[in-house]
Length: 302
Ligand SMILES: Nc1nc2c(ncn2[C@@H]2O[C@H](COP(=O)(O)OP(=O)(O)OP(=O)(O)O)[C@@H](O)[C@H]2O)c(=O)[nH]1
Ligand SMILES: [Mg+2]
Image (cartoon, rainbow, N blue to C red; front, side, top):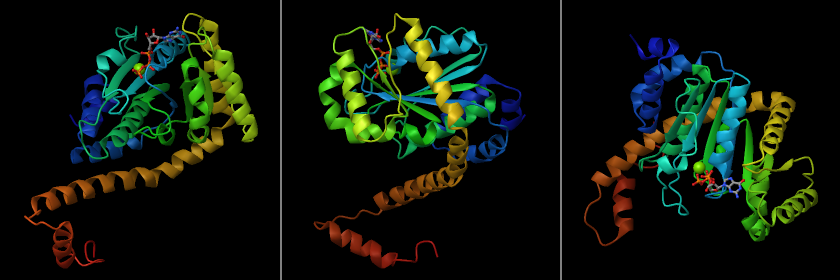
């Protein structure tokens, strides 16, 4: 049986194995990925990003519950942070809050780079594509970081939620340029804590000044289900209203995906070659000059 046949037959091990091969940047995935890409796509991809410990996983855990209540299939892709904040928290910890391990219609998976060039966003994008074609109705992608996130979750998600917490109130000013570009919906999480109203007002002010009054700001608390229900409803309103733009974004992504993958392989090969040709020299420019001589500009891909 081929990868594709197994995938079509909804074999979960094949799905998991393909995601691993994507993480590894293994060239043998291209054939099956090409076949799988042609399958119908139907998932809504919800991205969530925010500072470490903002309660993203907790929120997604509740999302999973609400989505399952509607009898939809849901997948969670937790992107392993190799970020300076967390120093690469253990994934077991990051997704420990998931209560759904025994539900076959819930798929939870982490992706990590394992230190490989460009691998993280590539693997995440490929992972989302696989989960979509596999038949999940909703795919939740969690990444850590605001603005400087290694994975630009916006590129992958149909709708991007930025989670902030009251403790971050003072930092909003500093962050505003970055986060305004990222968020389709703002979440003030841990709204049971002091300062939630302040951060909400501050956000709304910044959005108003920037002419982005239409960006929703919702407060959520883990022990108040109705707040998370409202958030999910806002996500549905957004994806419904933006249907055409989302479709366009997906069409635009075709070239992005191809370029990212080709760049990845070319760079990896080039790096390996260059490293193996580093000779002893006290002058870095001498090394580059020898490289230039060997490959004059414009000859590499001629
Ligand atoms: N008070 C309060 N605490 C919360 C709330 N939501 C989550 N927490 C707590 O915040 C801590 C971090 O929650 P996580 O869901 O792991 O946060 P995260 O953003 O996924 O963390 P990383 O993935 O490590 O960045 C946990 O101890 C949660 O119990 C909330 O609404 N209110
Ligand atoms: Mg988490």
